[in-house]
Amino acid sequence: MSEPMSEAVVAPGAVHVRAPGKLNLVLRVGPSAEDGYHPLATVFQAVSLYEDVIATPAEEISVSVSGRHAQQVPTDERNLAFRAAALLAEATGTDEGVHLQIAKQVPTAGGMGGGSADAAAALLACDLLWETGLAREELGHLAAELGADVPFALTGQTALGRGRGDELTPALARGRFYWVLALFADGLSTPEVFATWDRQQAESPSTTAALDVGDDVMQALVSGDPHRLAEVLVNDLGPAARELRPAVGTVLDQAESVGALAAVVSGSGPTVAALAADHASALEVAAELRAKDVADEVIVVTSPAHGARLVEPVRES
Ligand code: ATP
Image (tube, rainbow, N blue to C red; front, side, top):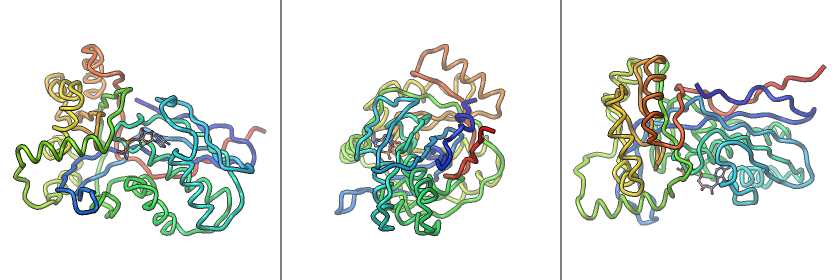
């Protein structure tokens, strides 16, 4: 099981916030509107793969990054956590700065919302550090300005997403689900995946009727039964991710034969999430996939997980 970094010993005055990566259990895509964005109907579920952000008082805003795929992540104002801090400073009129130390577990450009989790964690950490007194709802509005997946990283758990994915409705889910994640060091560009989807649609339009998440999905979530959830997992971007990265197809094709109940691409990929019946089965599926060498890393996580929240510091006595 992939564990978050242990409660760090943070410097006095520093704030440590942890936010989760997500899977899309369902991702339905509609043709792009005039603004170029595709309308989505999705079910987000947060997983136990976390981003840790430690915010320390500073003169200016700065970012450092460690952990999984850290070398691929910019540390300047292109970093979503940097932008989150700058947006909060602007919105609240503070002239304080912050150093944001990001420890990554969520793969970069993996379709699991890692950058969005960093942004959500940075928003909350700076809000606490600067004592702005903003309500969680106001943080939610700022989150939506930063990116479509950022509001969900704040709330976590399970939610229905519409629009660009940022119009959230909490959804009920029971129990705990065990997932085997196939991770790739080389990510996929979200715009490129959507462009491939557009081309595939033009060549052979799919017959998806209404852009919606069916009642069967909501019932499967409430049942807490992984066998029922396995029947409803779907991602309309799956064929595009497969075309751009054949290894995605290899994992999708092999997951069930090694004991997974079903497998689905998360977001725009390339991460593939294979649902297992229970923890023991997840460990077996992970071992089999590792032996087949189908991905750069294979890990086990659970869902649902909490949204962005403060990690109480362990103070040195
Ligand atoms: P999405 O599906 O929202 O595009 P993703 O989960 O596939 O996102 P991210 O890990 O969020 O992918 O990153 C996408 C790109 O954003 C990366 O290629 C990277 O250059 C840039 N980026 C900016 N800030 C961050 C960050 N804090 N962590 C990771 N990537 C970041």
